[in-house]
Length: 256
Image (cartoon, rainbow, N blue to C red):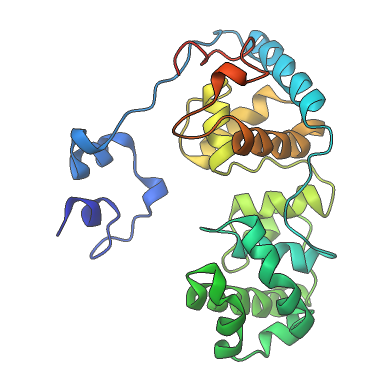
């Protein structure tokens, strides 16, 4: 088995890649293939961290006043399905297939009755289309069997649905139900570590730390603005720090 296959446990383990820590990655892949993330200095006092974070969120609000969910939807069911489909692909690509998907299957009953091959044909441009077809079909069945075909409005209920984790649940809570939610996707996770809001790489642990730093009323919109900033400037490999309007507030600026 190759080192990469061993890391992702493709053949014999049930562990997920996002459950593995850096030491496991180093052991499987070798230190030559893994670069440990550098964390910036941050205040010890929680109050000081909150003050620093507030300066960043205020600046983000000035830079990205129109940030919003990039997925297209008209109801909670559409948002839930679109969010599940957005894994391992872009929101723009999801938006390219959902009009046809929801025209054919506008509610859980229609999607639960859909043939797998028909769903696969529509979802083919997304990649992993067979798996995603099974996911949205199972999701529709779960909504019918557990919640009378209605999208539930609590985190605890949403995560009981097939294919729905905390990230997906928080997207739905924040953008359909108007309830505070922190969505730790790749951009939010990366930037929150660079800003010193967390040092956790596991999404759930990062979410809980960020929740201590930011007031709940700005959780959802701050995630949207953070995602926009990550896409525009604070890239994963080569952040454009020299032109970043947050450089004077960013503790990682000297590190990148």
